[in-house]
Amino acid sequence: MQKKTSRLNPSGRFAPSPSGLLHFGSLVTAMASYLDVKSEGGFWWLRIEDIDNQRSQKDITTMIKAQLKDHGMKWDKWPELPKENDGIIFQSQRGKIYSQFLHSIISSDRAFSCKCTRKIILKNSKKDDCLKSGEIRYPGTCKKNKYDQITQGRAIRLISSNIDDFVLKRINNNTFSYALAVVIDDYSQNITNIIRGDDLKFTIERNIQLQSFFGFPLPKILHVPVVKDFNGNKLSKQKNEGVLKGGKHIKNQITKSWNYLQENMPIKWLEKVADTFDKNF
Ligand code: GLU
Image (cartoon, rainbow, N blue to C red; front, side, top):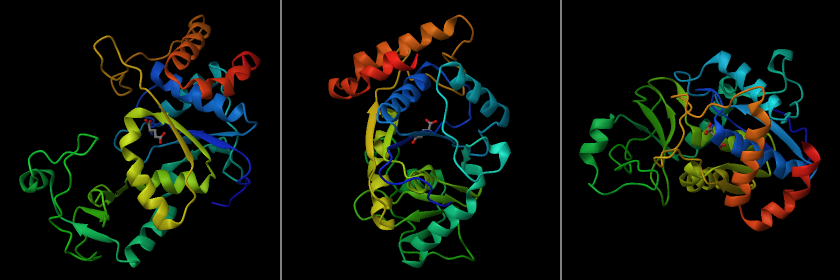
């Protein structure tokens, strides 16, 4: 992907996975990111994270686009894409690029082939060795195996210096990991300002390891507290929870999302977007 924007242009992105329609929590995150870059005169890109091919659905993307437009958020069109992309980057079309970057890790001897099933990982782990995400820390079982193209195993993992040896690619379903794809995409799109849900906060250390390995600049990252239901659970796209409504509900949903941001975001950040609140809608 060619770099089309200068590093001086603030660039943000909204990167939903098309596993379900946008809910109120997605609106809050999209709105925060949109207001953030638009208040600085920057670009706001839309990236569909359909890398997880089992859960992604094509029609959902069309509906997500309509939901964003209905709520006043138009994405900037990424140049030089086929017309049908509508200026949107789809991760499912970027396998070749991810492969190239993955191979640079492999050729630096920073990856290994892992044969472990979930069951084996659980069996070999120390009981309480959980990561912030709640995942079990990889116990290092296959770390001594060099990356081997012939007997690749189930996954390719990064040899990590201080955190767990996380997955770069799953071989059994031929899927690149979010950890790998997101840093490559953010770099390729010159993203300077990332705003995302705080359920992804735990991935920062992984992001930084890969960004440092590739020599990518570090974007600014702000995390929005995820919206929860009355029982304190995160809204789920897959379960169609809190899906945004259309028509007469739109205005109210926009106002509610601003109120949520005003209650939950740092004052300094809100001052920055205060004008945009009134100007854009
Ligand atoms: N694809 C993720 C989601 O739908 C967002 C990832 C990101 O913003 O980095 O929750």
